[in-house]
Structures are given as structure tokens and as C-alpha cells.
Amino acid sequence: MAHFPFQRLQADLAVVIGNMSAGSRLPSEPELARQMGVSRATLREAMRMFETRGLIRRRQGAGTFVVGQPAIIEGGLEVLESMLTLARRTGLDVGPGPVTIEQVDADEESAMALDIAPGARVVRVSRTMLSADRPVAYLVDTLPEQILHAEELNIKFDGSVLDYLLQRGDPLTISKATITATNATAEVGKMLEIQRGDVLLKFEARLFTASGKVVDHSFSYFVPGYFNFHIIRRVGEAMNRSVARPRIENQE
Image 1 (tube, rainbow, N blue to C red):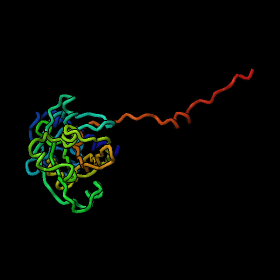
Image 2 (cartoon, rainbow, N blue to C red; image 1 turned 90 degrees about the vertical axis):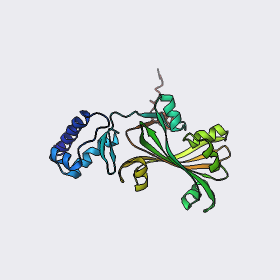
Image 3 (cartoon, one colour; image 1 turned 135 degrees about the vertical axis):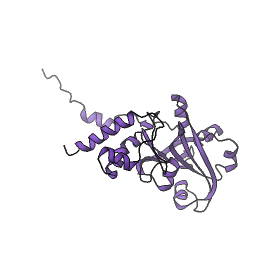
Image 4 (cartoon, rainbow, N blue to C red; image 1 turned 90 degrees about the horizontal axis):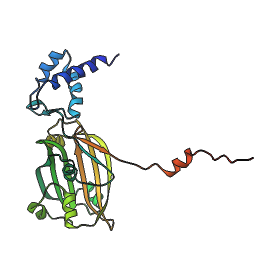
């Protein structure tokens, strides 16, 4: 029963949001908190659920807006595919936002991930991905300069480094990724138009060629509520053996 008032607040907010059309601006936090009879901190915590589901969108200095039911980008994790490929297959309107392509010196983290010397020249590609003009992902790829020159992407780039390398014919084989939940930094929050500290899904991955060479070190930040990733796993043989029923011999 201790959680009932908070659940009631979420239910009341759901009614308020549901009765507003997409693009409408919610009342300011102080005004909405007074209407709901709660503190701003409690209101902000309750509204986080709706933002995580992609139903509302907070814009720094502008307010909070109703988004409506977002399109869900869905895909399995067994095969590496670009977000653009997933979107095209499911008929969703997803495309790249502003792209930054720069040549920089590799920091220690990138150098270790790419197995190159610190300070070696690398190409860093940063961009947001948009769904209905709303940033839903922020992607950062870092590649050794001998793998990719900035001039190549300046000529023709659709937003996916993976697709570009595949179309170029690079012998890519596997990607090793770590998946975690993280809080948005100030930089990432600015790119995704969310608040610093908001929860995101984070992929850190390394892309390998057939010879075992690392050609790309990437960070991908996804706004929850817009993505449904899943994986199909085979049940281990050892587990199957451990639960198998013992065979009973006929001893007549």
C-alpha cells in the first residue's frame, strides 16, 4: 500500500498525457505538480517512466512535449545489422541526423580497443539517428586512419559505418559487444535532447575482420522505449543431460 499514491500519480499522468495530442506541450513542472498535489521531485520521478517509454520528450529550456506512441525498432542480436537496415526491413522512417567526421589522435581507450599506439591518427564518426525527427540513438565509431579516410565518408555516407564497410567489400566477420545500462552524460544528453543522468541502453563494440584485426571501436546509446532488442539462445547440452530422465531397464 505504501506505493499506492505513486502508482495513482502515474495513472493520473497517463490520463493527462493520453488526452493530449502529439506535439502538445505539457504544463510546466511547477504547475503540473500543483495540479497533482505532489512535489516537483516526485512528479519528475513519475514522468521518467513515460519518457523512458518514449511517450513524452523533455527539451532543455523548452518544456515537455507529448510524443504519442513511438515506432519501435525491433531486431535480434544474433546477427550484426545496422539500425538503417533494421528500419528498412520493418518499414520504419529512420535516418541520420547531423554527422560529425573528424580526424583525431587516438586516446588510450581507443588505442587499446583498436590495438594501435596511443596518439595514432584515427577517424571518428559521430551522429544521431532520428525517428519522426526525434533523436533516438547516438552513435560514435572510431576507426584507424589506414582503414578509413575521412574524405571517403565526406563524399557518400548514409549514416552507417557498418553498411559502408560491407558495401566496400571489407572482410568483416564478427563483432564483440558489451551491453549495459548507463546514465546520459552532458554531451550525450545534449545530442539526444534528454536530461543529463537519464537512463540509456549502451552498446560498446569492436568489429573484426577475418584475420582478427580490429577495424572499428564503437559506442551506441539508445533511448529506451524506441527499441526492442532480443536474442534467441540454444539450450546448453550439459543442461539437457542434467535434466534427462534416467532410463529404467526391464529386469523381468
